[in-house]
Length: 492
Image (cartoon, rainbow, N blue to C red; front, side, top):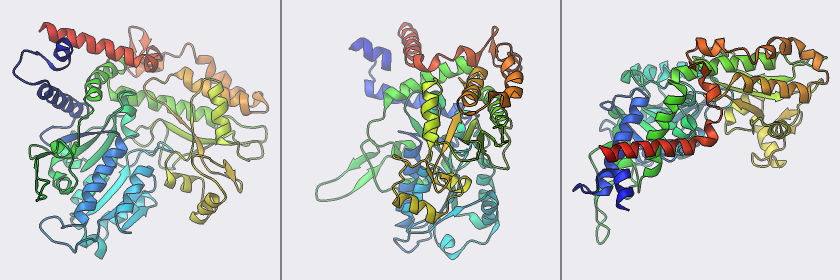
């Protein structure tokens, strides 16, 4: 046991206890995680949580408790009136769910233009009297469209929005692009991320907080073990929160330190395999454009596109500033009717191609792109449609989509295999796609110039190609990496 403690925590003969050494190691990894996002620890703190949803829920708790107590800047509000919340239509369900704690004081912005008009508009009485929170996704988890990163700084610079905080859901965004916090002035107040979605392992998330905006989080009423220095529970209800850092006050209970230790190794492995997040962004931008172009060229003899791709007019595949590496689509028959999305997913599974289908936890995106009115959605629910037990098509409309997501490990072969599968499985006459097959697929085995030009090759082998086996082997790779670091530490 002493050897295990030595390997994990340091020298067992040190006067420091294993728990103290573990805490020190956690803080070292916390600093490294901040460095991964180019976030200066003088200006940012990082709170470890279970996942991105848990980070959003932590913000909800703080704002709910602030809305039930007193205002910001020393101005006392009427008690129990809640906070005001605005969110973008592309928000993930976890971001939409924050509205349930606002006592009805919320607004869904249906377009980017609405958001920017609101930033410049005179606040309503409800907004003036309360703390306000604006939440939006960095990238739609349905279409992959990337939303403007400028909104937090626009809100911060607006004299009309001085009581408004910003919450960026970066779970989808951070998986395939560099999340850069180098400019503290322009950064969101709060950012939720998922390390699982970036690295594939460990199962861990984080809330990144601008320290200058962190005071409101200290108003959260709940406290758990590890976040307080003293608690009186008999004949008095007094307690004293820790005051050393924001994360000390917000990380309730025993930290998942095994996962946090694995995060350190995951960052190393990720960098060894793929280089920088900028490399991954360029690589996935190229692949997503190739996939979009391939899907767009698949047509029935009637001229009907095989795939109805759901894409925002402001986004362009191949441009990582506006579009991520995600494509949402439905397969159509020659007459334009929809093939059930679960049918497409099931057939793809049988061919070793892994897609996701359904509502994708994006209610605003589904309603917008599939043109579902609220009354239609309620009628569909009443008729038995459920996310967990879907009715795939109702009244001629699909209730969900098929989603293809590309990442650091994706390759040209993966992209072309999906296009080939769709062509063979759903086109009545394969001749209709010969133009695509003759052009794109003929270059499959010889097209290494693109990977090389993106700086993704290493000793003649593209990183994505070398990494195809990474996911099933990641645990063994991390164990080996940790063992090497343990040996080095023990010999030091």
